[in-house]
Image (cartoon, rainbow, N blue to C red; front, side, top):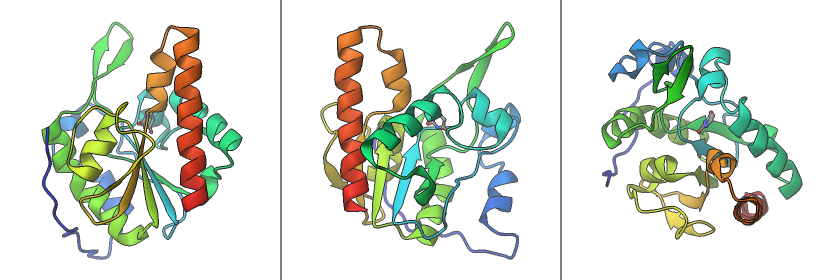
Length: 204
Ligand code: URA
């Protein structure tokens, strides 16, 4: 998938960005989600970190990166010397996409159209934050930020020029680490992830 660049066209009409994100009906994903999950952190953070979309726990809590992937991210960030509280943390897509299976809600990856619709909000967050560096965690964030959906394992650890003209450092998504069954492969991927987070902390 490929996405085109466009500058943020969002204009604050007085309600504020968060209130507008919470009221978003730009795509059908809001129908099955509990709530939109807005970004969190200092509005003028030097580092912006972008994930894919809220998961089950984020959807219920209304905060990004509080579930298992978020806890892993927070732990590895600490090891890497990256201060989560100093960064602006958000997602490419603001509503939880899932299908019900019994009592569980199974995560579904957002498609390129949903990423494109939600880029309206991501562009507005970038325009407001004006970060020195954006860290893209996983392929969906990379697609939203660079326009390219090419595989992330070959691109991680490198800085690409984002659609909005920002430096975008690509890394793995913490959920990917959680899914790896093989201990050695998981240890390698975690080391790569830690090294990318340390690079982000050093630059920003
Ligand atoms: N995964 C994400 O990409 N974002 C979250 O907020 C939680 C899990």
